[in-house]
Image (tube, helix red, strand yellow):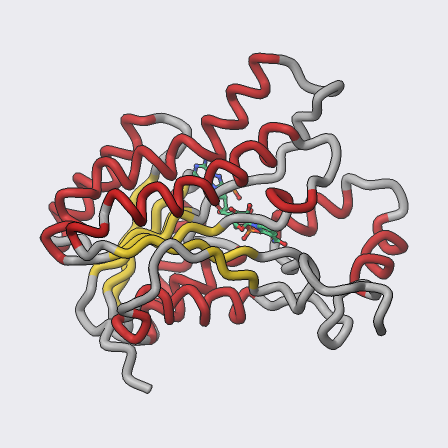
Length: 260
Ligand code: NAP
């Protein structure tokens, strides 16, 4: 299937690691120009070089996305380097364990800043260019918005808001034919996931218990599987899909786990 992404310019936040890295690689494989926005220059450079060496086209922008000025910088540098923006993948985020009891008001606001505000800020600054391109936005959310997890109020609030903004932005942007969708992962092995599981008591036992409850094939979702859905949503092959929240999770969020 030709996804028609050749020469499109796609920004991927957190595109140097984990799910974002898989999206960056697949976007580039489809012939698009990928702009990786992340906080660490060395991480960005590594994946940019790998993509360019493999015959793709990538560039990086160093950005601490919790800072609104850095979000504007991502858009400005993308335009300066590539002249257009066709799509934004809002992916960067971290389950930062700011709980109701363990956190405090300052930590809660900082978590929103790191997990939510940049989704809005980047969409806001990219908007004129997305409108010009009749482009689209794909957000990466989390099952935590539906299920809760405990001890992660800031992250859960951010992911809940991202689902709400998916519908809100899809409506606001109908008149411009700019589509907005969200992909929901549940359990995907990435550097973030590894750090999280290792922060728990008995991580190996906990991991085995989680995996045993994933309905489809009792295995974790791969980053490539999240990337495949994301790239399909970015493409014109999904030209009449907007405002959708799509779960790529082996049924983990919605299916009856008592059925094995
Ligand atoms: P990851 O392995 O930590 O990769 C995320 C990348 O984004 C890292 O390079 C990280 O940099 C960067 N980043 C994060 N916050 C940033 C910020 N504020 N400014 C600049 N760079 C930032 O994470 P992942 O597991 O691939 O997760 C990607 C997305 O999927 C997140 O939105 C997450 O909530 C969602 N998700 C993942 C899972 C899962 O099972 N993995 C489940 C549900 C939802 P550093 O490495 O320097 O922090």
